[in-house]
Length: 433
Ligand code: EPU
Image (cartoon, rainbow, N blue to C red):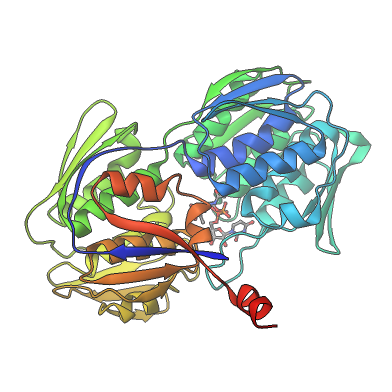
């Protein structure tokens, strides 16, 4: 069976939505918990498939995992016995590359299946991760689908590392490895996303010595071991932005709860340019759209610029804005595979390399559409909610990798959306034979 979403669009959203813990922080903090020679309790964990897969990988490596409540996980990594991940689990998620940094940092060696994850239609290199580990004294090879890394002499040493591209993954991975290295590591030209700061705070609360996360340069003084402790993951900036974009597209009024308004500034500013009213309070945003949407231009950039992970959702909003908007993707080489699906719904978008020219249309029409990656899937959900008529969305496992309880959260806002299980080709074949 495969899961699909059926959406009857055209209804404005009203009510309140509570944002879950940040996916891209959780998928780094869980592997980082492997470095802790003790028990750590992690709160505000989003229960999404990328997280459950990460927990399963840790369990396979010998960690004990206990779910204390719906969003609190206790990880005991005192008895890790193995530094090689199973091929099948690790290759399913992009974030499995963090296991290289965490295992290498704690045990001086790691064998991790090459990461999988969302495919935007281009390559997703990890050369900057490798550059960092090598500078710290590791030998890194790629063999039979595995990344093999081993520290000379069994422990990494500090180094000065300049990243050639601003990379979230390389920044976090090198930071983890350096936390338990001998001596001091300085990483320059690093990413500054909220989840970078969250990982540094997590490691520091377990006894690491990391300074400067959130600026261009991070200094890590290696410590011999990390102890147990408790930590709560920050709210998900992109999940919050996705619900804000949904209200912009459908109209209505929604209170977005459990957010850090500062993290939302780059998204809030763009939605306001489009005519969406947003009122900021301590840890909520009230989002309201009653009038016509206006065009704007967007260029994705590393934080604090406009996030690439909001580009598909925002392009969908702009499909319904008056006038012509320009969207430029400058983080990933290509991230427009969803555009053909929006066109099936009546959107008018021309893509030329990294730029999409979006001509606003009066309305979108429901259609059968297919999610090709996580944020593309979120964009199609938004389009289907705003469209006239019914849409059927396939490929929803991508969406469920990153959005906790999306169906329940949207239904609570008045959306007409439901998930159905339909027989897939294999089911049909077995019935015929
Ligand atoms: N890059 C390199 N070499 C490297 C690493 C990256 O050239 O060694 C390039 C990439 O090709 C890309 C740019 O640098 O052009 C930025 O990539 P980055 O390393 O920052 O991306 P990532 O760590 O692989 C994370 C998120 C993505 C998000 C990007 C950018 C996770 C698990 N993934 O990916 O999130 O798009 O940062 O913010 O944290 C998503 O959540 O939907 C998602 C794809």
